[in-house]
Each structure stands twice: as C-alpha cells, then as structure tokens.
Length: 112
Length: 114
Image (cartoon, rainbow over all chains, first blue to last red; front, top):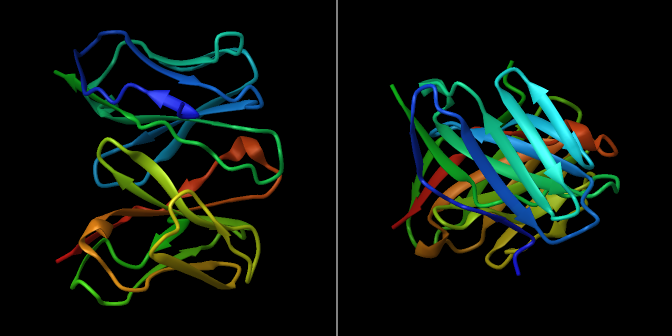
C-alpha cells in the first residue's frame, strides 16, 4: 500500500464550482498535512497546512484532516480559472527534518 | 525574490553522457532534496541531504549520485544518462526542525535523454 494515495484526475469544473480534492494515507505518525499547488512548468508552492485533525480556512481554501479515517481534503469555494493547477497533498511526521511524502497530485482545470 | 535556483530549465543530453544538475538556495536552509516528477507517478525522492558533505538515498537513487560541498548548493549527477531518466527534476530545500514551513521548490529542469 502506498503511504499516500491521491486521485490524479484530471478534474474539470466550471468557474464558481466548489472543488473537493482528497487524499488518503496509511502512516498514523503523520502530524502535519500540507497542500502544494503546482502551476504548469513551475515547481510546487506551499498553499496551506494543518496540524493534526481539524479544519483550517484561508480565503476560498479550506483544508480538512480526519486522522481517525486517515483522510485529507482540500476544498476550494468559488473556483476561478487561476486555480487551474496540480494540487499535491503532502503529510509528514513531527521529527526534525522529516521528509514530506507527496501524493500523485490532482490536475484541476477551472473553465470560464 | 527567487529562493531556489536550478541552473537549467531545459536540457537535452545523449545516452551515456554524464549529466550535472545544479541547485542553489539563498535561504540558509540545512535540508536539500532532489525529486523527479513523472506523469502518473508523482514526485519521487532521489536523494536528500541534511548537512554539508552529507547525503542520504531516497526512494529511487539508482543511476544517480549527489554532491553537497557547500550549504547552499546541491548537485545531482547522472553518471551515464539513459532514456528512462528523461523527466522533470525538482530541487527543494527546507529548514531543519521547522516542519510547518514545508519545502521551497525550484522551477525544475526538464531533462530529455536521446
């Protein structure tokens, strides 16, 4: 079983839609749950993160972690064409310098 | 504002050539990483380093080596390039012990081996 599983998509939605991106993971030691956004021909950039279980909101983006089911979600409200990118989930442990384990990434396209 | 710089955006090399990919960061990060990114496979860790002159194998180190002679520079070496090493190569860096800051990535080097 892979440590992190993510549906690669591609996912295509109309502008204004609510988008749900999801990952599952297997390692219960993961404490930090990060989401990266990668535009075409660019490196990934940290979008947001949560620590342990719960929700975190940042503008139109909400990250949600359910540690009991080992499920990570990123919701995008009122999606915009500028949100078109690949989104990667990346959990990690609490140890110093702990490596990130990346999901495959979900390619999202928001159509005007 | 560029923090992690990869020396080339696009590179075409011949099979059997020795290839050097350079990465420099200006954030005084202790940790540096090399990934390759392929469609359907996501990001796979090749090598990483937690300190100068120190290196650790990642998940797919075969056919690669690395060098870290200075804190800011981490080089990936393809000893004898092969066509299955055609890929996007991404360098990243991070602070030790500051988990919430995640990684800072470079823009990537798209390598084609012919």
